[in-house]
Amino acid sequence: MNILHSFKEIEVESPVDQIIKQIRNSIISGELNPGDRLPSERKLSELFGIGRTYVRDAIKKLEFYGILKTHPQSGTVVAGVDITAIEGLISNVIKLNEDDFSNLVETRVLMENYACAQAAIRRTTRDIADLENVLDSYRERVEQNLPCVQEDFNFHLRIAEASQNKVVKSLLLIIIPDILEIYQKLNVCGEGRSQKSIDEHRAILDCIIKQDAAGAKEAMKIHLQDVLDFSLSYKG
Image 1 (cartoon, rainbow, N blue to C red):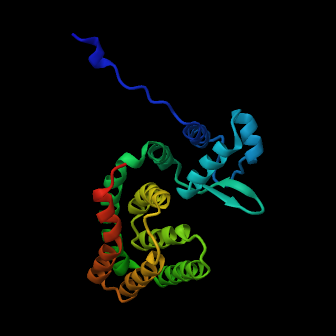
Image 2: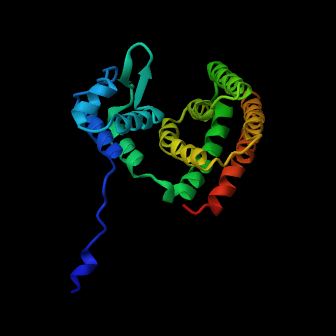
Image 3: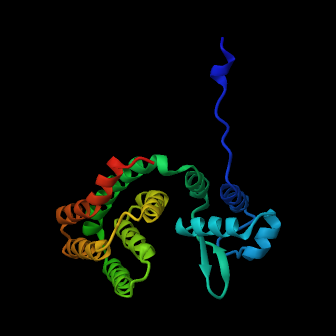
C-alpha cells in the first residue's frame, strides 16, 4: 500500500472563516441568542487577537446571509434565524468559493425560476407592496449612481418569500451573495446593466401581480440568462 495515497491537501482557514466559526459556535451553544448584541469591532478585534479588517469582513458576510444585522443606534445583533438551520448555513458560507461559481449559478436559476412561478400563484397584497418598495429603492439608487447590489439582492429575496417556500429562501440566502460578490469583483455588469435589470425586474413583478406563473417564470429566465451565460464561460 502506498501511504501517500491517503495524504490530503491541508486546508488553511482564513482569519475571516475562523471568526465566523467562533460566532457560529456561540449561537449554536446558546451563548448568543437572537436579538443579542455583539461587542464592538474594536472589542472583537481585541478578543480575537486579530485586525479589525478581518472582523469587519466576517460581520459583513454574516450580514449578507441574514445571520447578523447591524443597526445604526444599537450595533450588530444576532438575527432571528432558525437555530436548527444555522450550523449548516454557516458551514456553507465558509465552504463556497469561486470554484463553485457555475454550479452556484445553475442552482440559482433552477430555484429562482421555480420561486417566481410559485410567487405568482401564492403572492399576497403585502408581498406585492414589499416588491414595489424594493424596486423603487433599486431605481432610486441607480438614478443617484449609487451602489445597488443590496437592493438587487432584496428583490430576489422578496420573491422567494412570496413563494411561501422557506427552504428555497434559505438556499438562496446561501448562494446569491457569493454570485453577486464574484460579479462585483469582476465588474461583469458593465454600463447600462442596472437600468436593464430594473426593466427586467419590472417585467417579473408585473407577471407576479397578474398571477401569471408561466410569464413570471419566463421573465425570470430572461433576467438570469446573462449571468448563466457568463458562468458557463467563467474560469476562476
